[in-house]
Image 1: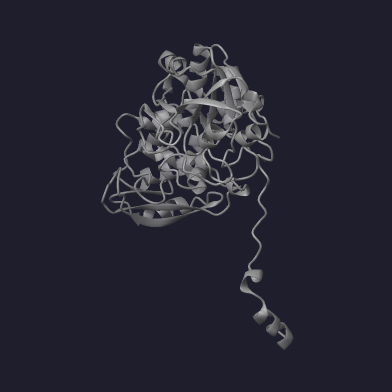
Image 2: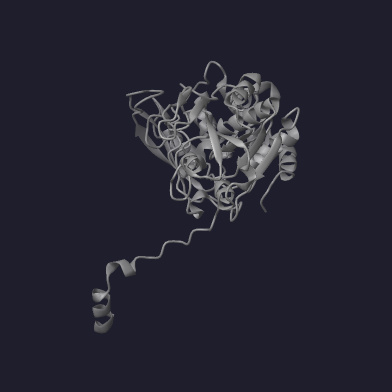
Length: 406
């Protein structure tokens, strides 16, 4: 390097030498589209909104606070799902009926309510239109999409209009993956037959629910995003990530969740009580053989590291357990559902203590008994995955009819 060049670099402020950050894609959520037009879609209506801490603007203000302060919308009620409207409750909990301290709006608890009891709540609230705005993570067993379904059904029973404000699928909307739910296994982690990783946004799911599953369709309107591309992950946009639930801390968690959440149906820890839930998996008595076994499969886009951790709550609280940490190095190639199956198959092979939850919760998560019985019979990853391909092909065809974005 010449002396002149060296002197120039020495005199240049360090900040100017920092590589430029990748340019974020311009994106407007459904809420931002609504607000940009002064809420004209809601004119003359008493509005109630189903939301949680993920209902935010790009500058991280909650949409309830923004709408409450606007003279263009008559917001009269809030409906809180699991974990609550402000997010104060852990998994399996809610905030209950209360008055929001910030806005003085009544907050109604919708968690685990459906059908006529939920319709009665909508009637009691006195709203004309129910609005839905919650960030999803792309997995069938993430309960907010079934809160959406239940609220649509209840709004129809109550004679209310229903408006869905769209947000991105954080793990892309390229395609659907995994087994499709069988109706006899319907629960709150899967009301209707959709794929385990559905590859849709909440507005697209609302269209699918209305067109395929509701006995009587609700008066549905969707407010799409602008600037969203199906191939892009969450960090492509200038949109803050707010954990949709306490154990979904980052978009990286969402990336693996549709596969590794299956460990909720086993006696292994799925990483709850650690800083990397669903990326750390393990149990007492597991050693490095598991990571070695699954790494040998050369699954696309992912590596596995032998890991040891001590959960602060949930399974194995306060105990040191062994297992694996998942490291995704190529998101585009990574298949979370296939990876989850491979992890189950190899865990059962290398650890004699492997077991399913006694209530066969794994069947509710996968949507049938097929995955569990196949693994118990000694099936390998390819054989298990092959078992759902025909029903997945059918679902993909149905799904295409309800997509809003190219």
